[in-house]
Length: 286
Length: 259
Image (cartoon, rainbow over all chains, first blue to last red; front, side):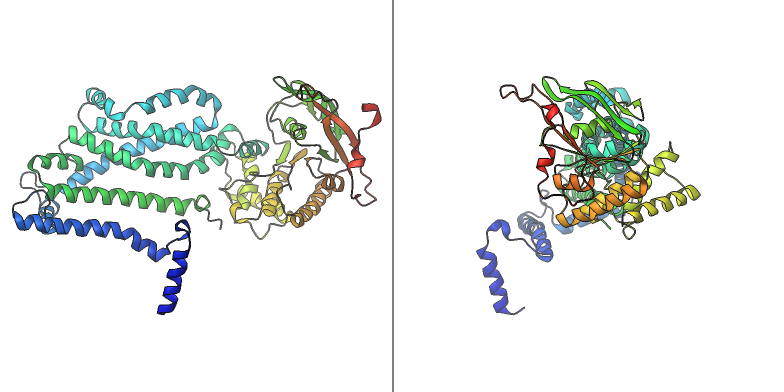
């Protein structure tokens, strides 16, 4: 592009109102990357300064130091257990998270559909679910520890109980909000309540369930880390809270970044599945 | 011609508000009845009664002499102004749905030969409404007129005794509307349908219907506008040998014995 054209575009951009200036695809990517790069550079700078002043600084470890510590927990087996720590932590955490989320999703699908489609079920169960939903899940964690013990069960139940009520309510509301015309039409086509649920409500509920699952991933991680922090002997949350005692920022920071990466990956995978399996939901008609 | 749908001394009240009062109407098989009237006069209430979406406060709605349950059933097909087709199904799947419901009570899906037969039936029906080239397209990629064609095919594949149309062409461009008029008249003749259509377009009503019924209030109390409900104030058989006059309102003046 020649200089004159560039200036012209810049001037025309400045003439418009702020709300009407929209970045192109490349520009949007650059803008989005900017804060991340800025934070990264700021950190590197600050860490270098602290390390220059005090070589034994623990608060802002340099990238080298983090890499060193990370390689110790990520690539070398632990001397005591003979296991690679970050691997066993990740597997334990993902298992708890997966089972908890899986249970919540199945329960949300079944109850959400029943509540959304059948008025009698809605009248019976909606109040109790609304009541459960307002209880802070962490507040019932002691009860779960007492009832299910300190093992895996209580952690899984915390995740499931923590995210299921909102998912149920969201799905029920979505199904109940399907145009009444659709429900009437299905009946004129001869659908029974079961057939209507299976062929009209279920397929339209599934992409919404994925949406609500994606939004619930955040809280699910919170409950997982909390439960692991309180009572566990392996897991990402357990490790972070363990090394906190030694002020080991060189372990905590890579672990947090690793958790963020895992969460991001799950979100991207779920979105990909939704786009692939439910093209009609994402406005792609053909 | 025999009576197919009968409204017997119907009253519809919502609490204090009276919507329809002492309405009686018989619709004979093979007729194309259009219900017109001002907004809020209760045209759509007629359709909801016939559909089974709601029950009259007093009186009966009879289909082939039997009282209707207050729920929708496959002997009455329906096309609404919008939301009649399923966004998550392709055009073909939308039409297949009715066939699958009938033959597969548990899964709601057909397989093997039964599926191939159903696909053939559905494809024929889609061809009849002019959608043979859009079988595997989702409704969101179809124009408004094509979506209504799809909704009609979806209803007709069940061979309903009565086809109910609720402002079916109200949201379409005038040009597309004319095409849809030709389509519905052709299907009406070919399939020997009985049609009950609600519309606010008088020209449309006179052009399509063999019988135009105007619904409005017979009496009006300005201090209690909901005190009196609507009734049938005129029942006209358009002269099909002449073109539709430009001003059809005079044709719908109340008949003298009713006033």
